[in-house]
Image (cartoon, rainbow, N blue to C red; front, side, top):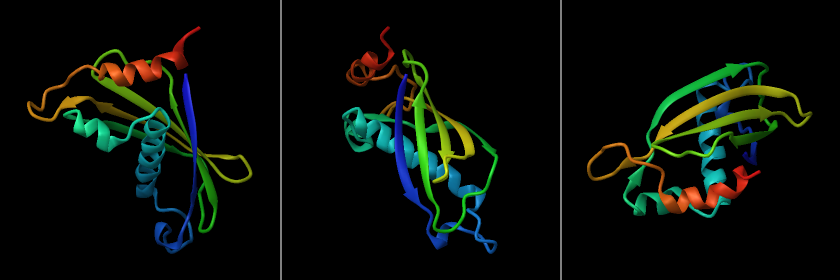
Length: 137
């Protein structure tokens, strides 16, 4: 299993009139966690795109348990529970407040797609090799 954590400070523009994070922003929090997770294994989205691969989101699910509020420091825990071996990769997110209370859970599914043909393709072997050690044993 591959797990990373990313801290995000909630600024005013992310909140609604009640000072609570607007639900639509959670997809951005998932994306920030995903981007940093990919960076921690040694790649950036930009580098993956330079390989001729794009990664569109094909599914997103969220469960809202508690609100995040203005000026909170949240932690986005991003987990890959399985090593991708085909065209699909699933990122699981858990968002916690500073007290360690679980605020939100989510799952985002993306496909690996050839940028020229727009057809699904398997995970790039270089990326799979970087992830494989986290799933051994």
